[in-house]
Amino acid sequence: MIENRLLLLLAPIVTACLVPMLPCEAYGTQVLANGAVHRTSEYPQEDSFDVQDSPAAEPTRLIVDTRNLPGVSVRGHSIVDSEVPARVNVHLYDQAQATLNGIEYLVLEDESHAHVLSDTGINTYATVRGSSTLVWESPDYGQQLLVSENGHAELRTTSIKYVVGRNNANILMNAARGGIDDFRLFDTSFASMMDGVVGSGEGIVRLEGQSRFEMHGGLIGSPIEVFSDARLEIFGGTIHDWGVNNTLLDVDDNGIIRIHGSDFTVDGAPVGFGLLDAVKGQLGGTTLTGETFQYIHFSRSDGGRIELVPIPEPRLATLLLTGTVLLGLRGRSAAAH
Image 1 (cartoon, rainbow, N blue to C red):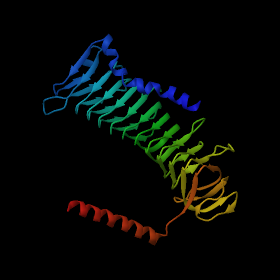
Image 2: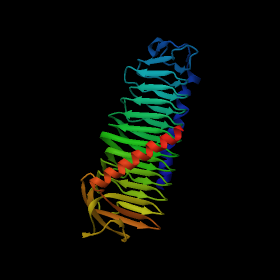
Image 3: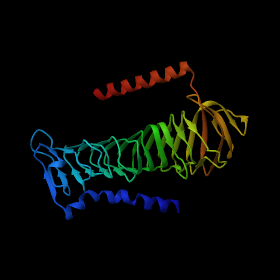
Image 4: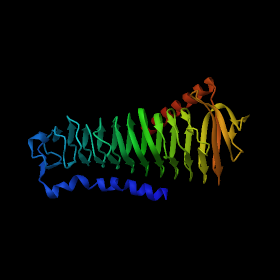
């Protein structure tokens, strides 16, 4: 039931791939490919834009200085920049670049790059794929973000309802404000959380398919499910149950949760480091970065593991770091020869 609901919610993201081109059938399309600088205010308001690679040395550049556009398609090292907040549908291909002061639908593929600085409403959908990169820096509330096929996304000061990573996605959450309601990671994808909030309300954090999630800071406030060889590494931050006494850490089907810290307890009794024997209970302790936690309900089954990892002594940590650097230098030296 939950998966079906999520697929319905994600449907507009897939549709977004076509949205920028749909208005072209009803209105005119301005094809820009001359390496010059153009402004949307120079053309009829109803027109869409197809910004293409230029044979000239300079890339074709489109300045968005009107607030409503049917659609913009950008490809081949071309550039789009926004000067005013605008609800715009943008599709970037072939290493195109965009700095946007608002979006409605955004699709990036083929090593494109976009920086979203602000938003103009709540109905925003973004898809990042094909080794493209999105930096989303918006104070407003977005609906959905789908990152896939080696896509990269960095989330700063933004709130998004649903975030999904698939097929080697890479997601960095570094939001000083805002957060994500529902977060899901699949297919060897990776996510790192430095700040902000993930999981609130009826949302969930779900990891599957050898995906990996590292938590260094911020707050997770919803149940966390780690299944099918996925891994959750907790170095710092806060896991908060919002006063609800249910299972918050659920590890199953060979998933693993590793918590780095000290002073661990299960049901109030001290426990040593290593794999937990208990299959359920309440976990407490102190993370590597010093945050304390208690009364975190956990459950594991079908090969699911929870491992309590000690904090390295300063001398040991230095040796480990030195060894890592030396191995890296040796590897580069060998590669050079």
